[in-house]
Length: 187
Image (cartoon, rainbow, N blue to C red; front, side):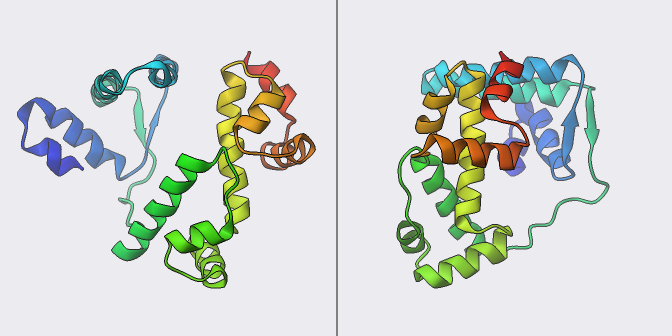
């Protein structure tokens, strides 16, 4: 990614930000809240406005001094290009379809694996079963919806859960609090 920015002098600070990000970055102070607000605003923008807003966010992050490297060593991806491509397809599919029913057969087909082989593969590369991963993803989406003011029921069904009681149990298991407490804390 940073190679794209390196050839353009105006974007050299972004190239440096992406290089630093290989160590992991933690932003703190007022910048953290400010960027959080700007990220939440993205959802209500048109695609071109989103693009501009993301560039502005990256510029702010590149210029701030309120940043800390999380690791001395750069991150090294342990997965092959083939595995990375396969995982990108799976994650993109989940991101696009999390709000509706997703079957193991669907994701196995995307991965060009049998259902059984996919289950073994996914557990090996992610440390989670696919259902655990999907539930965690849906809970993160429901948290976003709750923070935007949706009711617990709406957040449950809009994030792909089919049962409110299962949603409540899963939310509590993953977040160590129930959805209504989470919602009240952020509103």
